[in-house]
Length: 582
Image (tube, rainbow, N blue to C red; front, side, top):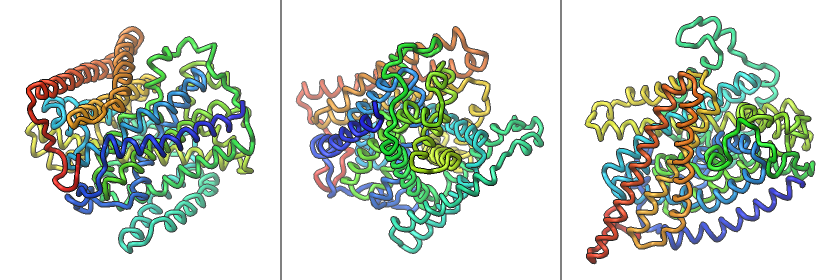
């Protein structure tokens, strides 16, 4: 079957979903009202709370949620066949992520732009807030560790991409100064910034930067005798600095550049697919699933940790996006369209693995001969597939490989920056709750913790990446389910239809809790020392916290039911005082 025909059907479904379903959510479920003052205006400080044009904010939100995960997860999941992977990407994006991402923004702005874990205090209970924040802490630790490893592996395997990635930083800073200091409209300068970035691709191909000699010269100090570990340390040092500076200096302008990059990547993938009219080499449903692959249910729904629905999105939505929303109606475009954009990237990743590999002469059966091969080669398969589609557009293979690698690293770096910034917020809140007020106010100490904890985990590179990815995916999807539980209770308290949140909530909790139990059994039976002493306890703690939060949500619903039975008024103290609010 020609890949472009499948893509056309998916795009048509996404257009229908945005045109009608997101409007239904905006008008009937979340009841957006531009008469309400958003936190970006109420708490404006020029650092975190910054009223932002919806197109610029869309760029920041889009690239923050569309990191490397919607590339890696779908590229791995093709091992079960392209049809199950694509079906979950499409249905999850429309019906789960649409309500989740959009709802997380709305619930957050109605609670002073606090993150979804803290909002759980008002919506569910005080204990739920603490439990949810702990789960978010573990999720961000895994997110930051995983993406640091992904970037370091790409730097080692593709040293030609180092110069373009480094060049993006000064280009983004210059763009930020131009937009925010001189009040210049963002579109034209950001397009020029993309041109300047791509002008460095030939230089990167001509001058690959390999830090292996530097890593070997450091000896055994701090595990940095390996180039991968040295890259991890350098990445976290950078992320710590980037997380402390105002969002308009680097994060927003770079995300705007990356939003253009994402559009360009999608154009290269899908126009290349159209021009080449390439057929899908992978089976729709793999009849010979490798023996080392976990069962498709529930693991398909956690391996695709982004690209369908992702708990990390609720952290971005409530952690940074809600602090920059200019008016409530912008939440529809930013939240819903951002989800559909990420779903498009995930579809491109599926097609790259299912159809793109054959263009460059890679046999699908060899690339997906085992789950270990699918997992370890996921990023490489995507990059090679993109290079194949680019070759249909007369783009040289080497430039196509650097371009594909740049896309993955740029998105992963954005996620790393945002993840460390959000980890800082979470640690501050945990410090405040626990009474460690000095820690919550000491930004240097908080930033050090936010960097050091995932750094230590990322340095244990002997842990199989597939185990770390599955645990990250499970925790990520679990967080999405818990965020949906907060949204569902919020809607029920206001007598609105909770079905858009409840259906994906029940499904995700069933899949993720089952996956956590199966993971624990596997870690005990086949894990090495690091797996049993690090990942297994982490798995069990997350499972315990998740079950407890679910119990708290059920108790909150019982309290609502009892209040209505007594005909007590159901109050909504979190709603804004201006406008219609609810």
